[in-house]
Structure formats: structure tokens, C-alpha cells
Length: 209
Image (cartoon, rainbow, N blue to C red; front, side, top):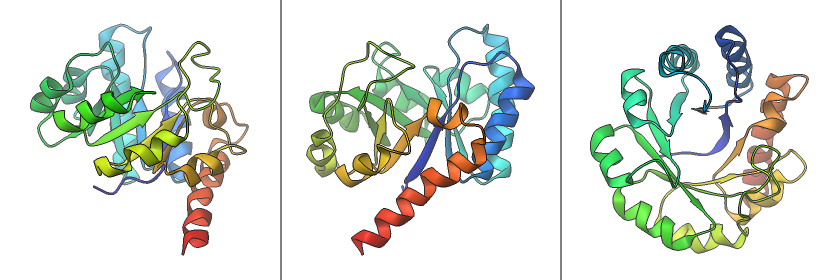
């Protein structure tokens, strides 16, 4: 699969209309992959939000991934699910999701990446690559991991503390996508921020060619 560019990860927001509006702006700016992440809401509220975001993503030709919960992803008709360390077995999620996307957080571990690839992951995420305001205590992942994981043959996602200022070095290190929360959704103009992140990939492609 082709997976490259801005990977928007939603902030916690109980107001579904506001969350959908924020995501709509990110999609307008060029995000083609969105991860719905909500830890604090009841399941029915999460299902309603996920369905709203699936509809928004599909209107823009983008894909919506549900964090932590493959069953919720199926119920919402999302395009896939993303698993962290505590979210169950990737092989079981692969069987449940069928042809839908499966992403796996590998933190700072190349061995976990190898195991996730063997279990059928569609992409691998490493981070936190920089200090993260969302997860200040997260383990740091060196940028060298991206080159080390390239032989696994899967798209690589960088997450954690990524801003417009530091994203170029992540892309140069080999990340196919940058996963962004705060620097995108806290921006005064979410669509403009999304466009700026997308331009970084265009610029890197031009430089490489």
C-alpha cells in the first residue's frame, strides 16, 4: 500500500460537532489518513464520533483508523485500527479486520516492529521521536530506527512531539508519515497547518529527485 504524508491524530473532544469540524479542516489541508483516538468517552459516544469521522474522511477520499479498538473500527465501518502495547494481539486483530488497515505502535523497539510485521501489520509506528506534550513520559525513539526498519518493507510512521520545525529531519530519516496532534489541531488555522505539513513531503521528494 502507498502511505505517505500527514497522519492526523485527533485530540480528545467530547463535542462531536467540533471534533468533526476540526478533522474536516485537516482533511481540507491534505491529510489522507486520520486516527480517531478517544480514551475518556463511553463506548456509544466513541462509536458516534467514529462514524461521523469516517463519513468526513470518505468525503475527502481519505481513510479513518480507530485507535485501540478493532471491534469499534468494524462497527463504525472505519478503514482500520491501530494497536498499542496494551491493546491486544496484532495477529488476532489482523484476523478480525480482514483487508482493513492494521497499524502497530513499536515505540523504540525494532524487535517489536519485526513481530508486528510478521503478524500482518500494514504499517509500523515509532515514537516518541521528540518530547511530546500529549505523552510527556513516553519513551524516546531514535531517528536511526527508520533506516533500521526499512528492510521490513512496510510504511513507517513517526509520532511524538512533531512540529513543522522538526518534521523535515524525521522525513529525511526515512519516515513515510508524520503523525501529528498538537501542532495540527492546536494551530490557529488547522487547514493551513495541514497544508504546510504536506508541503514538507513534496519538498523532500523534489530534493531527493
